[in-house]
Length: 229
Image (cartoon, rainbow, N blue to C red; front, side, top):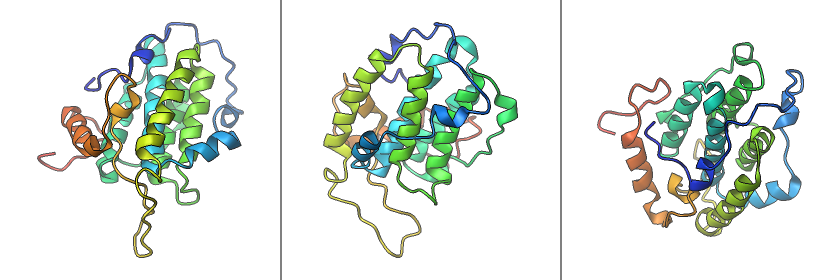
């Protein structure tokens, strides 16, 4: 995998713990599709790209959870493409979620994680507030992780870092253009902001994202990079 570990806390996760949470095929929406009002309000102060990046970073925790239990490489590939799409959405692609093929408490959360990234980029016309996607990812992670103390400590630190670097206030406000085909989602957000041990300068975000993209597997079916990228 071209991605280095997201952060030290993730590597300490006891991912081998049994998958023993309840999983009802008829109630999967209740595991992630909601938001705590106070949490949503605070995350809404971040840029759209900051919330998308946060959702992807949280999906890396979900990815790590299932490494010992049957991780599907397509989740890892879609996460990679999701990071690339922070530079240009066309670097990734829309996917159709095939729930019958991903049934059960191990596979279906992986598909939902892919779906959260997919929705953020390609299916958000009726709800363009990206803080919802971060909330979906948070809810899912809190449900499937074997323990959440390290995760919650990481999230608290990361949220503060994002507020300092990639809130709308920090970036100078939303710059919507009435003639634009898409809402302004803010500036680039690099994966390094999600490592509390890594010094981060938001002015380096595009350079850091480009360096990550350069390391990604060109055989990834979800990754569509122009020649030379």
